[in-house]
Image (tube, rainbow, N blue to C red; front, side, top):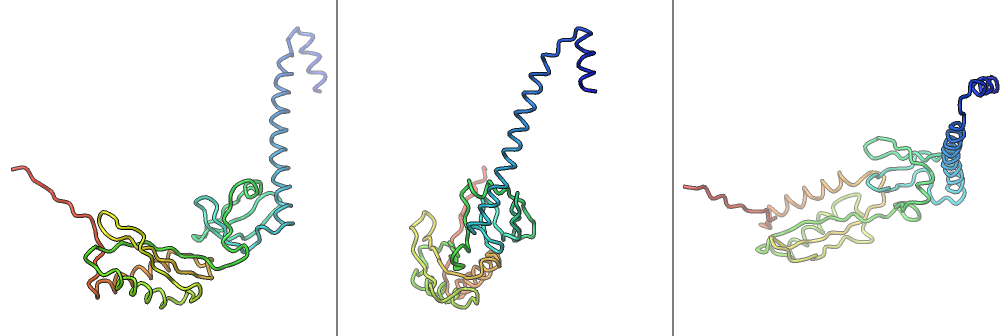
Length: 205
């Protein structure tokens, strides 16, 4: 049928040279499409063979953070901590920088930053923070939690807290919330102030 249509169009004097351009563009697009598909399949084979990423690993890819639930020939399924599953092309996992939190060690640092006023005792604040971290069941004893004076800022003294967990698959938001709440409560009981910006509003007379 295709041959008959071409013969009829040629007999009517219609120029069919545009079909050459169309066919070339179609073939080029098809080639690029197959190249991507082939690249994802080969990448999937490499991921399964070298085990750089395994089912159950905790990955951070850009702003996405979750657990690998499946590795297929064309894509890898990542379940975020909010339950949403993301399908990531295998080629992306090989060409982009990926953070694997559980590649060879499940011990992960939990960083916390807070600020105290210049009128507060640094030593007392650091003592309170270490006691709070030690009470948390998810925070491990070794490496032990530490508190550092990060810098003297305009409105207060910035402190950096480092503690470690071995279950990053449970997420960090709830743990951070519990630690911050306990620190805030103990700060209030020990007259340690967390500074906040003060604004003076001048009303015209």
